[in-house]
Image (cartoon, rainbow, N blue to C red):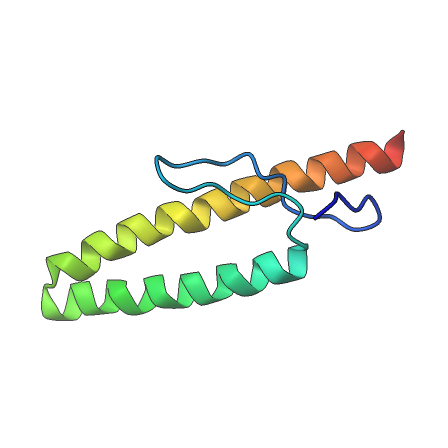
Length: 87
C-alpha cells in the first residue's frame, strides 16, 4: 500500500513487542477498528466491575493499550498529512 497524500492515514510508527501499526491505513478504516475495540473494552470493564472478573479487567487494560496506540498513530499520520499539504 502506498502513502496517499490526498487523505490522512495511519503512520505505522506505534509498536508493541509482537505487533505494530500498519502504515497507510485510511482513517475511516482505523476509526471503524477503534470503535469496535472501544466497544469490547467497554464490555470487558463492565464485566470486570459487575462480576469482579480480574481476567476481563486485564483484557480491557491490554486492549486499551492497543486503542491508545491506534489514536497515537492516527495523530502522527494527521500531522504528516498536514505537513504535506502545507508544503
